[in-house]
Figure 1: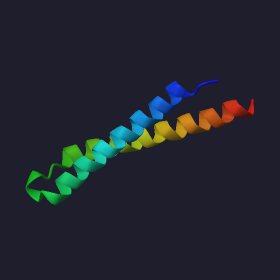
Figure 2: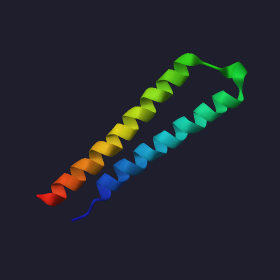
Figure 3: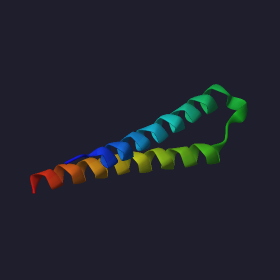
Figure 4: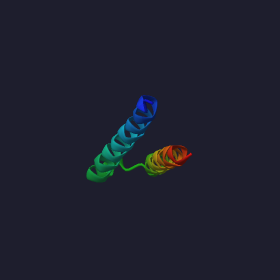
Length: 66
């Protein structure tokens, strides 16, 4: 049984997290570009992607037990 779609989903989520972290670093290094709404959006996006990865991994672990 292949987990390719699952692996692709996890890789995509991590890719989005890394992009969001890069944006946060840019904002932190360029105080004149500081934008609270963008930081809030990035925070929500990172949390959503981490929760998605957690859900996928837990679901995968649970399905292997059955």
